[in-house]
Image (cartoon, rainbow, N blue to C red; front, side, top):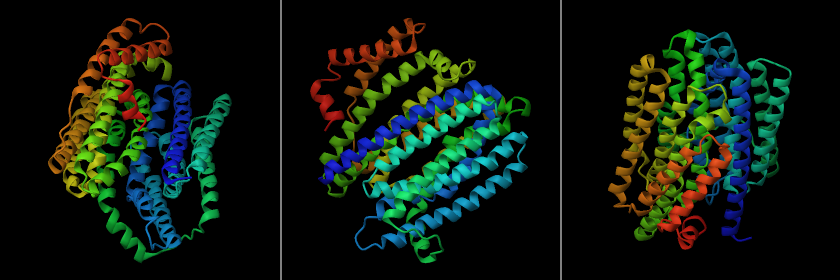
Length: 474
């Protein structure tokens, strides 16, 4: 099999596995919101937000360096992978221990504190498994991880169904989560052991070499965590104790919907980034600009109907995902705007790394993180989850602006807005129609809206058969 076909085949496997896994994940969230209710789901969301805050510090940019370095000529693959794996093992263990201890100093309910201790095992397995996935990606062998992802999510779904049937509390649901992630980790690890013998140990020389390369990535990821993930933590800490967990639940239910939608952007940009990088490194600036424009057009075609449809159909979507969370409808509408901004922001933020400008962007990411903290602390005590959602939109817009300016200044890239405006017009017409149909079956309305959108796009020549092939096939 040629390299191009191998890359394409592994990409298809990865995307299909991710899609099936995310569908199962949405079902799990729907089950949990129904079973736990607003306050119980708030406890669950607080546990996840708190533990993932610590996991960001354990990342250290090791995922990216593993993919980039593992296949370089002359590298000792066994020593390199063992060094990265060991570094992740020790930092992950230390930070999960810190999370499990520090949570007892927080003004959280007892069940949240106990839940963080249990969930720390899940995140620890997940941190190690991320490095394992990087190994499979570097070797263009994604079949096992794709199957494992679906298997792990299926085990989680079955376990949650059994646990709900047995009427257990949140802590036992977290134990089910630990078991499913542990099995997921073990299957992937068994595959790696067949190809490469991993040794856990201290390798200071390699660790110094690795961290010198990864610190800009690690620091930027911490900044991203602050402005993208800390909203739930601040909401849980800054609101009165008697309503905090309930409000976290109302906010987190639509937020999970956001996370599912944006999960596919890195997959798409993961395909585009190497091509952009190759064009840039070979100084084929015209090819670079053409590809950048095509990716921007692709995001325009996808993003506008997604945002408009999500805003218009927020109520039936929330009834489908989390019945009884009526106050979450407005939050979902605000977060749908954030989704649109995040979609468009991924192009320049990925391109910043492609053109080697990530270190120069660190001060801007730091400024955004600082602004986010100030706004969260200043607004959440008074305006609750509405402030959390609004600040998310604002800071994501700042990231889009800063990264867009950096890319334009370095590359001279100027996009054309023809597809963008035609997609916006088609989405507006679609929104008017589905707004009148929102009381009908939500799946029927979604299909109707999609047909209307694409029909209008073809009529006004926002899409043609040729552009579809250009944007989504070639």
